[in-house]
Length: 470
Ligand code: A5A
Ligand code: MG
Ligand code: ZN
Image (cartoon, rainbow, N blue to C red; front, side, top):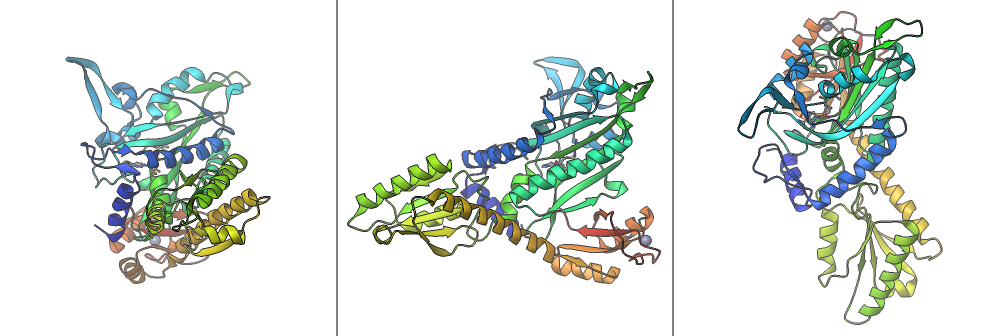
């Protein structure tokens, strides 16, 4: 196990995010702290999607014949599907699949729903659990067999140009979402041989975890008319003809929470963006032998004010244990801001604040008029600080290379992401992957640079990224 992997498991346990002892491999229990982080994350996501999508909820089970209609799609998932074969003691005459994703659950219904050009576009999403019998090493939140938090959007359009625009729009949506969590990313087009089964092409978001490996945290697929043909999804044009629709879909998962934990965490434990934190502020009274009552009373007033005026999630920790122990515990749980107040602070009209992301003590003048505003602006500084730091680390770890030898050296010595010019031909790409012994992550299309392919020396078409991945 890598150092990061050990850290990650320890944090999941100590911060009470999830319990990994459930007796099925790849399936875990969300604990109260983790559940709250998840809830706040989903709130942000729903607020964004609800602007121009409608939320729906499809059944978990998919009939065998529907799942198997789209040949390429089913080929891509055949090793990963869980099957329900019995109802009680009775063998079912049609096996039912636990959805690995919901194209084949939704699209037969879309075929009934879509009638006329005036119905289009349609944009739906659902947030559900999906099941994939993953054969690669499972890891909590990162590669699970029950994806408990699978957001999948599915859109239907009347032209190819519109799906292209929707892909752009979906990328914008996920950008906004990841930005609000402070998670940095690279966006690439997956190589032809690594796209979503059944898609025309796949765009992906990847972030970098502290061990230098990337994690795919979201994907946007242009499905063209592939599924429309299989599931017979047609619409009537203004001139009365029947045409196949064009579709996109895009999704993300529990991996988003894994990256919040991995990207922002440090030796002291979790560090949560204020928007996600179960408690955004913890208030610790510093009590000496005398004057304890007075300090607690004062802290209660502050707590009340921040709760009612600022709608903040705040916890007054007046437990009878050493302050140092409290600091340690809340730091480990990632509470973004700690306020300490002792008798002297009250007299001086100030308080000590410690931002979790930098862990330095600062003094804040205590002005009741502006307190809520002051704390809110500190929380927003924390959000920005976390995001900037995370982006700086990602950028530092993308390094250009000019030869295969240099690529091999960089990847083995430093991990991270390397970038180079590639001609775009499949055979050459496969050769690159073999020589470096790491798979291509994807290509950045807006490559204007000139240059020669790192491998075959032909004219380069794409700036290509490569990294070890989860
Ligand atoms: N229907 C489309 C959206 C779809 O299923 N795309 S996908 O297969 O790429 O999955 C969407 C996202 O789910 C991926 O980008 C990845 O971030 C996440 N994901 C896939 N398999 C996972 C697993 N076993 N555990 C956790 N997350 C997973
Ligand atoms: Mg897979
Ligand atoms: Zn080449």
